[in-house]
Image (cartoon, rainbow, N blue to C red; front, top):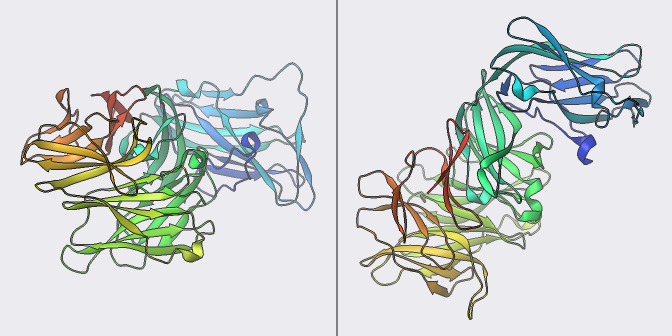
Length: 494
């Protein structure tokens, strides 16, 4: 699988290190003259109708002497975008220039480069259709830098997969990944919504182009580490791909780790620990039968992998909950009918990560119970109780669905109100609600999926197929988030 980091850098705007643009269809790299910088632009084959059309532009010094180049971050009017419309008409668009140009420049040493992400004026108003797009950059020399027009398509979003897990949300935004079916291959986008109103989209950030459809996941991280998350994808081969992010943009080329087993599946949400290491849960099935092992792939800053064992199981777990605490430790929650275990990965040196991941039993099934699942959540501070990260355990009993909070290190905190539950109901997801009964997504008997709370039961719009998750706003409202048309991420109040 090939990945192209099109939106490669916002180096001038955010003080990031300059990032190279990998040669690809739609990218021009032209030197205006022997003593001028090389101009490169990441022009994608597909752009979303109604979205901003942004283009990463890189100036690179391929000469033997230092070069002064214009600072395009503060002088975007030096870039003229050239559009050929579907009807054959041609347009030139650029940011309006001020009455006086201060002429800011940057000094590039030999081999150095600087990149900026610029928006085409009124690009969000382009109608669907096939265009040609190129650009010129006024370099302040005898000849401008020219990127010849290439075919691009503007069209509606075509979401085919994604990741809307609660653990992948960032501070100040409700984040998700979604995959767009492009004219050729697929584009991976980061979707950000307003946490005060998750139905309001703040932006779609293009992260990568991949050749084949894949399972994608956005890593969980503590608040201060969210700018350094990773996008992980797995296409069913023996290779795990991990693209590190810097804010909403790719940081360099992806790590590629070849797994030492002939057959492997992603088992849960990846996570970034407080030391910046990436952890990816894996299910390694036995050569025959249903047995297998849960393993944890750990990738350090230099891309060196380690494979750690969690436990051996009789069958693949249906769900493995993942979270990162305020100290940067990664916790993995494994539910079984008789107990709930938590495995913890601390921010230890990579040389120690070959050891098995330590686990502990935090809850056991009470007499007459069968544990259905568990979830991490926040317990509010109360009488005789400290607030903070805890484990919600749900179990079936003769009285119904019983749930309770237990401490992260083990030990019970509080029992919650019982919800109705039938013997043939099947748990799909838990949504913690403080000290109230949780929200429960379930399949009632052989019927359609529903969402149940103490207030009653409602149908889950669109069923439970595809990529979806339950969400709760700051004021306690329950939401269903799903990747799919017309979205690409749709939000429904429950």
